Amino acid sequence: MAVLPNDAGSMRLAISLVDREASVPQGQPAFAGVPSGRLLCSAAVEHFDRRDREWWPFVRLAALYVPPEAFEALGAGARELLAGGAPGFAWQAGEGGPLALQLSESQGAVLVEVAVDLGRWLAEMVAGPAGSEACLFRYATTRADLVRFADALAAEAREVPAR
Image (cartoon, rainbow, N blue to C red; front, side, top):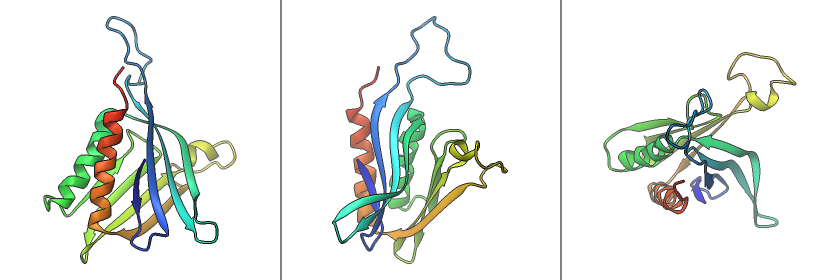
């Protein structure tokens, strides 16, 4: 699991890779608009409860399908920010994905903004324009924690076999 905690250690973004979809065999039709080989992930924004010393979710996306190139872009963007190649970086879990992340340098720390669009799950209960059911979490993290997060993302991707 790759985690990106806040600088106080009380909140974090956690991303776990679970599996990879099988690629469509050569010559076989793919489902329209659905790329094959996507990564199946779980993502959550969690808080640390000091009473029971456990992490509990504010919001958890149990099934998140991310194209491999989007997942690779997340780690690459974090590394580019750390190397000073960019002042910030924005990422989304695929086209129209329900998870987005923005990182930027801010007075020696890294500002993290995590957006979770709950519209897909709430559409049956609440009708509204796209993005009107989004949760935004903003916190500061350290450069060291961002390094650990980028390294953990790369390790997770290596552990999920290609199909």
